[in-house]
Length: 93
Image 1 (cartoon, rainbow, N blue to C red):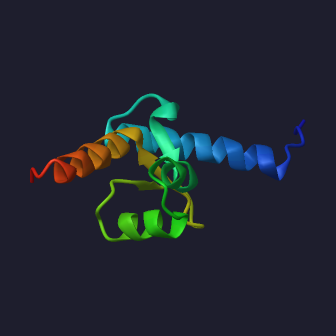
Image 2 (spheres, rainbow, N blue to C red):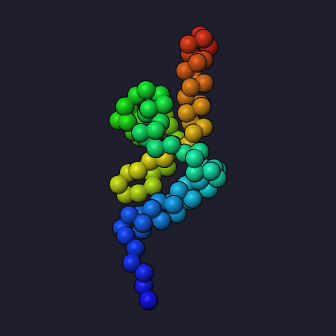
Image 3 (cartoon, one colour):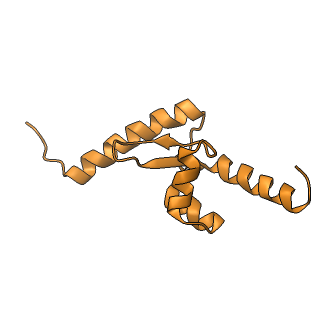
């Protein structure tokens, strides 16, 4: 007998599987170690379009989870970007 699952539940299950594969490919194990483009944008005070351009331009490591283009960015990229910005402010390169 089949159990009815909502499309939302099925999508969540697929995203979880994709996220697990993404974590393995990047080396992470904790789902909270990844940020959505919106979360990343809010933390660095830029638009989500800017974050997507950085991802597409290869300046941010990311994983695409679906055909729709959902991206997840490792939290370590936020740390790297902030450290890089601090170095530029201090005159280091």
